[in-house]
Length: 241
Image (tube, helix red, strand yellow):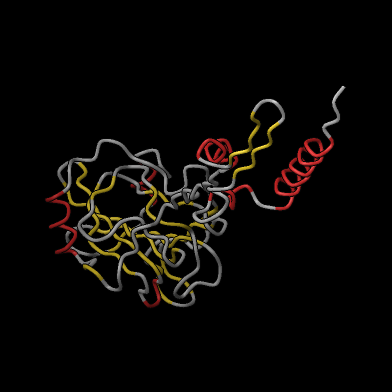
């Protein structure tokens, strides 16, 4: 048997060099311009053997590449109330009649608080003066509902003693009937002047803005003459007291 020591030595050196390159050089650097594109080893031992880091090697190494795509999270939309600006519209008799003329005939009615409330000061005289409505007590943030279909004739984000308030004009039996709700939470109005509402629609949240010592809705009713009257008989007549 013929001894081929030099050939085996060259082969061994080639293997050692290949392992060193594979373990110490990043895969991407082998494909970079000007790297080992022209590197080639040939060992002859009866037949040609070679190592070529040309295009075929680059193609094999390319599989190691990857791209990380981080999806952009989609924010959850937050519903926003339509906040009425300060002192819009009016809540006198003329505005009540005009709003009623623009409203549809009311055929359905709703309680201010469908789930119940406690009435405090009623309509009539009291120590501080004549009380022109009914105070309906409830917890902070409880939704307040329109008593009938109608049109918003007044709304305010900071209405003085009435705090955040809204007034609606209705047409009941062809007659102008207006309802007013006061002391809502700041920024909780859901409609502004000129908007239409339906019976039972949430128009704001119970608060204590303005001249109020606790959370409640001061509720008033009046007609085309602008004179406030006791709302309880009307509410009872329509099953919403």
